[in-house]
Length: 446
Ligand code: PA5
Image (cartoon, rainbow, N blue to C red; front, side, top):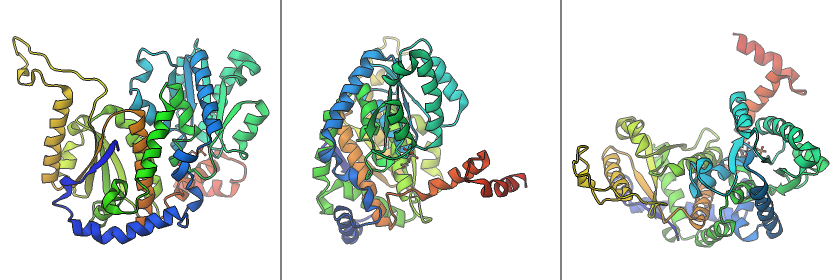
């Protein structure tokens, strides 16, 4: 496997007896998940997805991606939350955070509809001026306000530029198989559609068309990605805690939570992991943060954030633990050369690769943070390949499900997200929310 858990830096914070003690609960969580009898069991489609994905749709995704690569300079992906983060995270992981500025034969890829900022949308519209554009509107429910607004604006742009017929060839919709406003609109207008399966929730949907179409447009190898996820599915269905790194991760974070470590900081030494951290935060935050429980998921990129958050982690309130994602191979290497004058005093690093220096930064940091009272878990990932990414995605998804069951919550719903929407719709005067409107406005006035 490309993903390995290393718990050596936990030794002062936990003992092996604690893992033994939680083993029966992990087994129970495993059984709940695999017998599909736990809370939220109607949303377990992601569990077998690497094996049972729709092969016809998979080829259609690759065909659509090839067309987009051939006729578009800019590809705009419209979606929010689970309909956004996975695709962006995968593209930045596999390609680069600088993907759009790099020399390449694939379209620039931008993400819209993930906020209600008019400035952000206007800036993107101006980027699209004079360029050949295709768009992918992604919404499982088909009714989410943020992407719906961006879609309306981009449809208008495409229809003005290409005419209704031409726009139809450049608009792709990913949504429910049969229901919802977006599905109706797509069918009426004749847009090509892809499916978010009923039994896969937004934050677990990166390996469906939601993530796969944008990832394929970037030129990444979908077969390898699914292959990695498939290997992880096989590896992590072992109920034996001692042999299952994924279950150990879920168990350890639960044990640390019980000891008052209520915030998990996901750390990486690679900027291309930044959006993976955002994806992970949604996965864990939305799955576990309910019933007044749950670890708070936070993230940092080192050594960048050692110069901002490092002080707090080393020395602030002690409710943190870190999970560090380390890569054994970097995408590209730079070796420091000798400088005859050595004015900057860096010749002691002559001949050393930056990967080596980064590794020493990790070693120094992990020891310092452990000394400062911060338990550290390490996830070692072999490289930035599609296969490793597939494994990592599945690792985190399955650990999240087990973790949620250990915590005693339904890891597959998100009832809390509705509260802000209800208030926003009422304040905007959406039909059906009249009663709440006056009460909310009165509260805002006081
Ligand atoms: O994980 C989730 O369910 C959410 O983050 C959704 O993905 C997000 O709210 C977008 O929903 P939809 O795809 O229905 O537009």
